[in-house]
View 1 (cartoon, one colour):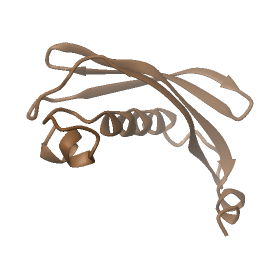
View 2 (cartoon, rainbow, N blue to C red):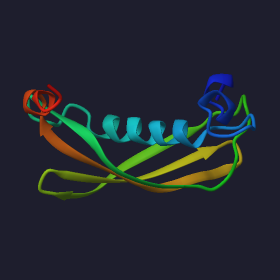
View 3 (cartoon, rainbow, N blue to C red):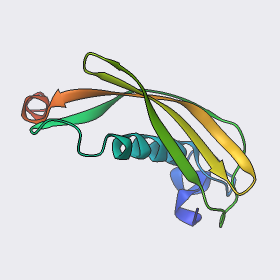
View 4 (cartoon, one colour):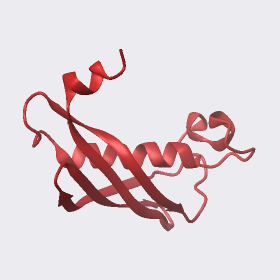
Length: 111
């Protein structure tokens, strides 16, 4: 965890610790990696819901490890259990839900 990952850098606080928005991004990233290349061609997954409790602060220089495990598949919804640890133990836990969408159709909605 570096200076660019802090609450100060993200504008989400005034202390030099891991920012909650950065932690959430890492949890989403881990859920994407957990899917790997299992999605059908032409599809992707998009964030739908994040429920993460940020339990402990993490200082600059500490390594953060995120784990995401696919818990449920409900139609096109994928729900992951996520947890984050630093050198001292558990710092966050929760769930990330992503939806599988057709990439082209999804992007067409932005036009």
